[in-house]
Length: 121
Image 1 (cartoon, rainbow, N blue to C red):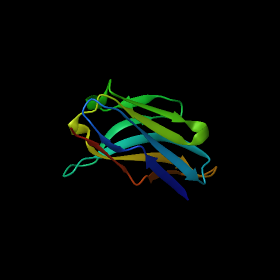
Image 2: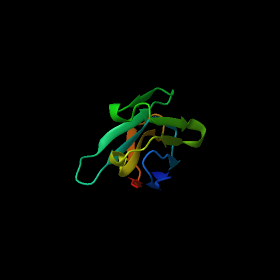
Image 3: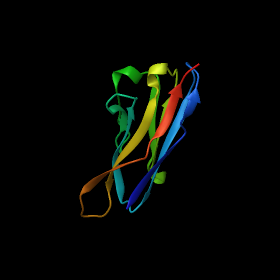
Image 4: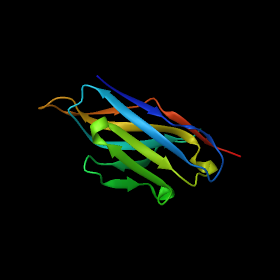
């Protein structure tokens, strides 16, 4: 019913920047929280940053001051600006969205397929 498509990943040198996008499409009445997670090889998936429908942002401590989450509600899209990247930021980055498909109806959590971010010299 709803698809999330991430883009913007790639290979970047330490200290570099990337901008990730995650666009939602399909049967959408409203999207509540939109969140970015990441999973490094051999590690569990971890929360990175989230943003509410009203624009309240939240970050894991390790990315505060370096990453910025934003969203465009008209486009059902969430962004993650990654600055001052470090090798330890290397991971597959996933977005998720809490979607209300119809009113009345439940909130359904959807996931994207992930985009690889590699930070290496």
